[in-house]
Image 1 (spheres, one colour):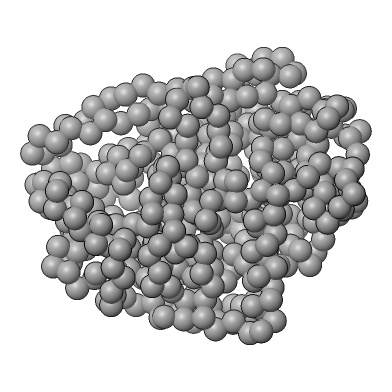
Image 2 (cartoon, one colour):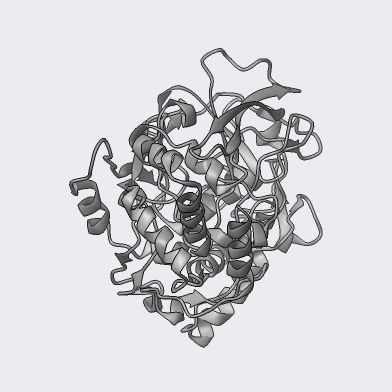
Length: 449
């Protein structure tokens, strides 16, 4: 373990030549806290301006209406946080509370009741909607609070190493509209990282369908999620969100602004008031829309143009050994090490790039231990989209509290691996059975990405 810690320290401190397929124009060699905040190199003067304007909006703290400064007004009437970076600090991942005494600072709780809407989306609760809101504007009652507690279990690995895994349990308090029904479906989710989104958006749908149909070993399958696009008004392939339940960066952004901060837009004009929340619907608003189309353009471009950290120390023998083990354990079947972008008119610099995202953007059944039992369009309660691994070795550098997996239960990458089940059960067992030296090499490789 001492050797692994030394290697990880080198990885975060010494960016070196990387044996990688990605070009320098879409990557950054920075390995500091700002590693997720760099723009791709080939931006036109106009796009550079949009990038800077989008960055300002992502970092903007919004205020409740009515307010003298209408440019930053519109927060609420219900909301979880008042700025994007409150959950996506430095554009990185969020984290879960360490226990029930801590508040949720970088995560939220999705809610739904059995059934689905006409578009196939989860059915929101009539009073609590589809996301629990912790805060309300003056005169608007906050919906309630969610707390997370944990039970610990210990796993013993080959070689004697013991790893403690924490299983989360949700509890609710201060519920404004009475107890949640017994059949309520909940899903606690940390904020995902937002760098590299443009390159993922530029992967053609045909590539995802080909990956879905590709023969895979053992019980591994993988499939696309078909979701409703509010922007296109039709069902399309989803690729963003923990369950691949959103199809574009623009819609993901507009949805988060509406659901997390109550900021309406042309795409989501109703904000986040649940159907039967009278006080919420009667609260003053700053205008319609509160997020103008040009502001959404700027925030979208900012995320599309964020560069990906380049892999580090790829010629180091221990890293190369870990890469071989990654493939041998079949991790690379879902965490695809190489994909190709297509034509991407929104930001042509992202077109026809060979990239190393370590994801297939497909849904995979991860077994009962990771299931939230809450379907989302075609995704079942135990299916999750493969998260991209690029830049993951810098996650703790950017946000020391960062968590892994959808609910942040995993405090380390090893813990995240040991929670894998379902289609990834055999891969997890392979990692458990590795010698300590091989396991260190595998983790060193993942931390080099």
